[in-house]
Image (tube, rainbow, N blue to C red; front, side, top):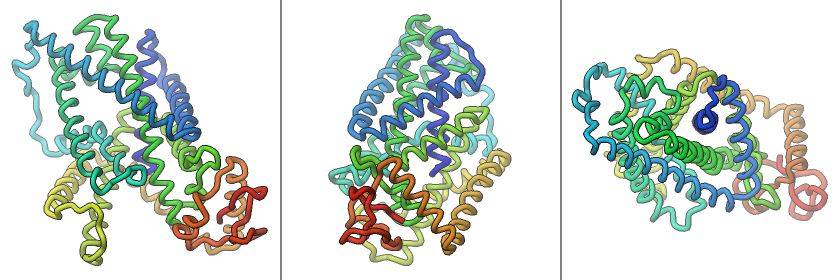
Length: 399
């Protein structure tokens, strides 16, 4: 989760920074772009900490910017081809490889552009009727985005060759300059930069719910499941995600971030599907609000597993780096569980938790939900009648 969400945040904020700087004619060093990207992440981290409602309105605004940007690109491509510029499609598949490994690697890399559908899986608690709306929303959104992205790529290839697309630092900007003219390119760059910012905002809004839920269920430090007393936002989870995203901004290449993000999401989905099969076998009568025919799950599982194996064969270096990061996370988790039995370690964690709560003014959602979701945790100290230690008499401290 940390790799998928934070690498996505870093990659999209770096892309936004690149378009902002190139829009003003600056071709800066990578780390100058990284500093601009850090600023973008900080802004949206603060926004999501302060107000979920405002963040939602901002997400809607940036969604409009994204649709506007791709609409301009698609229409410009159609107009360009209508003028008779179809030479790039005369031998469109020249140089196409038949290497299965290359196809798998390209699919994994392209998957990064379509991972937005995953955000909806993190938001059932925010939906009025997720049992009714979850599947149609995911299917409809993915269909629309697939259609829009296909048309956008067709527009790109009508103006630019594959080698130009690979080598240009800002595809949309160069496309508009060649297809229409420089002024339109600047306008498009503004919309693309805003659209990328919208992705950062959406990830901070949705992906932090994984960390929040893990804290509630005792799989991460319980302090990550706290909310701000005034703003009612999962502030700790948002700040942790923002800080890790900032660290990823200094990875030397954006393409590396997109690869890591795609691999992380692929592994996460494979593990989730594996858990799906295990639960279907061990808990056949378990209540399932949303049901999927197992036939489709098997097909997707086999395809994704084949893609993972083929892409590993084609690009073992990035896979090995990713697996090292992944297993270091497992090692950290098991180490924390082992040390959790130590009174000294528990005392240090209690002190850190108390410090974070007092500094950020965060508390568990409600006493009832803490007792239900964090039942393994204990509450003591100077307590009120409900058994929760209070912060200046205003809220509970969790352990």
